[in-house]
Image (cartoon, rainbow, N blue to C red; front, side, top):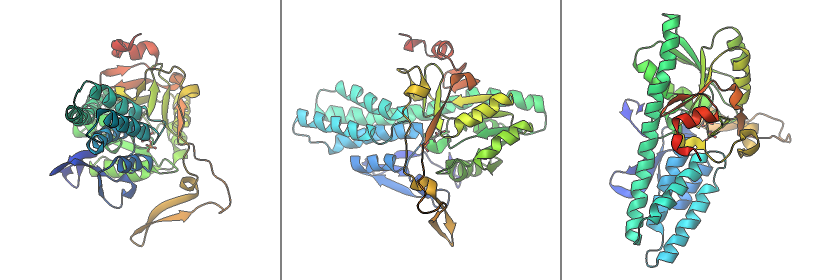
Length: 371
Ligand code: MRU
């Protein structure tokens, strides 16, 4: 996607030094565009844990590159020491954030791929290739999600004539949450590029405001008409026919169709059901958890620091500063994700097509996952 007219991915190898990984440090958006170098496994772990990078696909891609960086820094004179270092690095990365399944998926994919190499040198070059493959596949899957999801928006647009198609989204499942294109936003970009009249309601997404800060910024960069709304407005808009379709992303979806996503998604899905608004979830297959069946019981929910709830960050006199919202002594709880049961989900948009949010539907697109 473009930033001020220049194409960027969210993560890449540094041009003149492929032992360094570069990322867009999202903590500074939308007010500053900062590129950060990651050179050690500690840098990578901190970038994921402290949310310099975030979003399911990008967390996975960063973990993939993290394993490559670990392979470069690992001891090279002894295979056992090399393997122990890689094992430990995988554990460090997996412990950074619990909910997005792409993280463990990418680390395990690296371990499996590197196991095929015999010499250390070969393992390092496999790790590099695998990291690049994970990133390229993520971008391509999101592009395909855009192609498939476009048909939903196109159909609504044909029914509405000149009126804009109003899409509600939550959090940021845009290109900044992946390597490129985004999941929930990919169909929106595809529709906009096809000159379909779209307008996006952007949930601000308290407490970190990924919608207000990041989704709004990237839609703006691409010229997509949008309006930021407080999180509690969606129900009202739906009651008044001002939302045609909801599309969100997901951090982990069970193969039975339960969707773990940013806190607040469940309430929007309930409102969508009550108002007959189609509620779609867009995801690359790397965000499916093929092992668990009951999302509410089994998807781990990250709890983040209470300061994110108690303070809000914003631009003041040209500087980004935190401001205290609550009484200083009031405790705050910060559940970062919730689970929307499959019965509230109209369909899943994947790189292989759109399916109902249930086991039969998911396995019809991914038959190789049948046990
Ligand atoms: O806590 P974050 O910002 O990493 O949350 C993840 C998300 O961006 C959302 O939950 C998103 O809708 C799904 S991830 C593409």
